[in-house]
Image 1 (cartoon, rainbow, N blue to C red):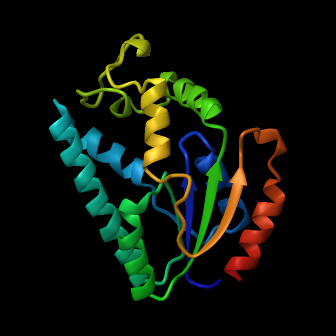
Image 2 (cartoon, one colour; image 1 turned 30 degrees about the vertical axis):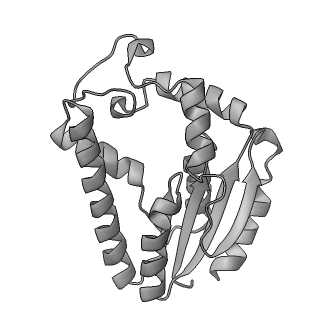
Length: 201
């Protein structure tokens, strides 16, 4: 397998984690590097009492992410990374893939934004969702009995503005496969996996 970075990009709520699992079933030589998982790790280890502290941990998480990306690429490890990537990350990712001679495949997942907002709401209210995403104060072990009361839940307008202004729907590095996941039942995952398989050989 060629040295490959697969970027599962696109809007929130498009099933990036699910697609990542499918790819790993097909090809288990990938290492997974998830900015959100790293962010949650820092939140659990340190905690935050306000938005400034939360943002500082997010920035530390990104440094940790890029340090690990460097380490994996130095070892020639193929990587899958899932996140709503934007132009904020593009230059750093491009620099590293060029430095270590990696081929890059962006799988950009898009969908109707109204449907995605409903998915986002359900995900944020689910007990499996890390509280750090929906709270301005968090320490490991915290519980919100009624997640509707969380103070950082996105409103419809905030969600739409974020999706439209951050470039989630246009991000691309390297080769591109764009998939509309408005209706998951209509997504041909077998075809996507086949195209990925041809790319990484």
